Length: 152
Image (cartoon, rainbow, N blue to C red; front, side, top):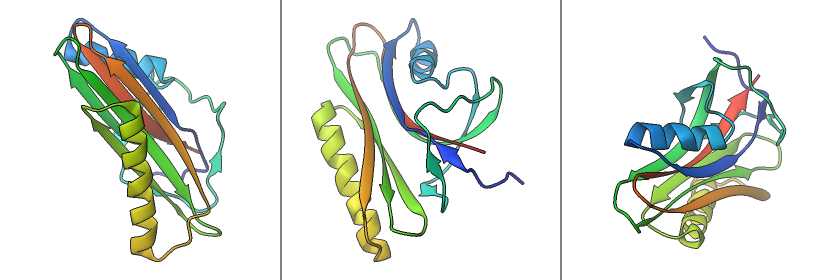
């Protein structure tokens, strides 16, 4: 069993590659998590988890991560990915992730609405939101990626 994470950061990046997988990998590298192993998790930020924008995670680590990504091989297509963390007053937070064939502005609007809905559904007071978003115009094969890596 993994311990409960104590720190997190938010990140978003996009990149090109010679294949869909290398485009994804290149976006991970630009997002500062290309040399770790992502364990995809759902969307709850543990109580007391602290935001650390300079967090460095050891290479090869198993990293619980909520993320959204999209890969496209349609030249000229606009793709975007976004994540948001919603904070409550004194309990857990909620993470949402989104990706689609849209602009960064549309992705940011969508992710913000998703966090607001998640808090309303839980009948929790939303006190702050942090958002990361990236937009990419595909040249050959591109990826847009946004994530919330959690660490100990």
